[in-house]
Length: 593
Image 1 (cartoon, rainbow, N blue to C red):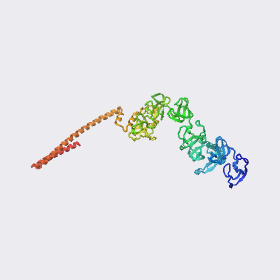
Image 2 (tube, one colour):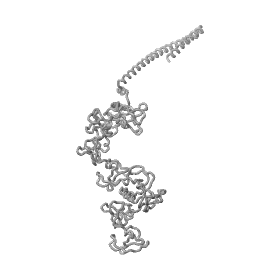
Image 3 (cartoon, rainbow, N blue to C red):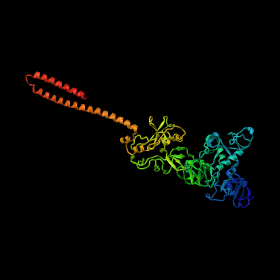
Image 4 (cartoon, helix red, strand yellow):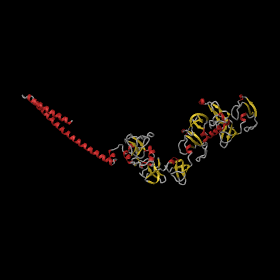
């Protein structure tokens, strides 16, 4: 016979195993009946000769044509897309797609296997022959969950049955998914799908190497797609953090379900890939179209590259992260439009209230005398980088420059929290100020206002209670008392390494002054009583000194008269006088004590 892979006729012959002749079609040893050309030492298994010249395979969407790989050098030999091994001989090829499949993988179309659930870890897989089943047998297909009828892949030992049509359809779809590793259709206990992140049970496509499970529904639903941001088709895959790929849309690391390009390193998060192409947003009067470019967001002023919603006629860009923003806060200083809360505004937009700017990207900026470093600014008020903005008018005001609710209730604490200009326990050099909210417990900026419970000494920084503050600013609750934060208090307290008495006196209001006057009056009265006590002590001290001198004189006279004839009488008299003086001295000492 003649074969397209060899120019000379091939003769049918018998080959013994010991001859060690290799088949030019599959690369395995030829034994038994084979076709060959002894002159050119070209041999083929009878089964390889009978291979079809063209096939359709679930590995590829296009027709595949039989070719012979003549390359002897392993570096030039083709690699099979199915098993990732070098192709030793015949291959099925798609020229436009540069796709190759060896004959063994090409023959898998009518083969399948199941996993023995009792010996799952041992990898004991049973062959699934195609048997005719009837609906009356009430055997459920593991893919569509309907009763099996007609050709069915069957394993009576495991009770595992799949319609032939379901198996072929699912296998085609999973190859379109293009996961780089082989995946096995298995039956598992409840598992989490790596694509939809839902808990599933039953049949699953599993990759042991990547610890990846894909339920059948996701395999059938997710196919190769075309996206406006890239010229090549994108395929859904499962990525790990350590893969290092970054999403083109948002610039963040790709993890989990990700659309990627098989030809280059282009990647998109599944969520970014599914963004609406056109939206109508409250921050702009014209429709906005999703484009991929470098831009500066008109809402938060961030400079970035990637996906942005753009109005080309107005040169307006809206950061994808800012599409959740909406004007909702009424402010007396800007009656034209509602203001939009932007948690982090980049750059240095001037505030229309304090006319100060957020200086620098660091948490604490500017020169300072506090602690000898640059943590705190003493030459300008610090108002944070959270703004209320009118994007249309470019009107900006710091959140801490507008009247804030005086009292709020928050799940982080049982008692109401009261607005406080600042809370500084001790302005010492090593003092670290902490937010007490359980989900935070991070260092806070002492220059910022806080919500405080004095009874529990509980401090919550403003950023941790925005969920309660913003609804009150939006007017969702009536009769809410508000007050402006005094930014000067914290700055003055942090300018020195200590809190001086003068700082405290200067911070008093009228009520504090009246209370201080009462304290001063009481203090002066106490000082008067102390002066009287001092005068009494001085007089008593002088009396004691005089009595002591008199006692010394009497003792000297007693010695002089000790030899006189009136010794007894004189001695008795002097003794009485000495006792009297000692008694008087003791009384004076008791009065002094």
